[in-house]
Length: 329
Image (tube, rainbow, N blue to C red; front, side, top):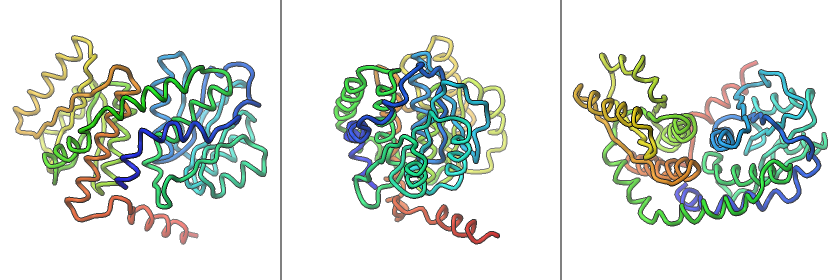
């Protein structure tokens, strides 16, 4: 797992290179919207894309379900994402989308999704595993690089190679990130993390961090946005009922009102004897902030697994559930 995590900066160009001319046949009206269909580690890179494209006036909708839950616009682009290619919900959503539009691109490393995309003549990007036991949750860079390359082929983005190479260079400059991750893990060990951040960091990096705690460290974790938590969730700390650690992802570019709110939230929760860790988000733009934060917590979650004597690569609960689901008539 650590090999996969350490290689994140390389994954962007790898994912983009796998695209080739995929998407070129879909050139036409620039999509005002993009729908992303997927689950788990194959879906959260879509939240990164959503946050980034929002700054560029392109709306992204993400569905984690068996069908597309909204009407598709005539020029809407649909990305179907399943690294394994065998995700039950995503396969059903792919079939649903195919009956409603032909502006679809599938992203997968194989399985039934690749077979169905080929059989139906649907544009597809065949992702390659960097290692034989590579896990989808480590594939955010592959997905994101492929997303951008396809969108350039479609005609709604330009110069994506420069964007990706700049992001790679910035990540590679974070020389001590693994050590900082291990140090943070030592401070939050044996606690349930509650990740709080402003938007769009909460629904992008916050969601990804939660997933890394779940799948790598094998512990519950939750995320929620600021300032909404001040209006409901924090009242739950009247009776916390468990060993929580509040993890505040503090954006350096907060407005003065939000910065004051974060300071007060930290001070108030600490006054109630809650453990609070403030993590200063690094980066000069949204891509650096999202991927830099996710990468830090990749190392945090792997360190927590190591401290517990667990293999972060294996997901026995999820695999056990899938077997039980397959046996349910």
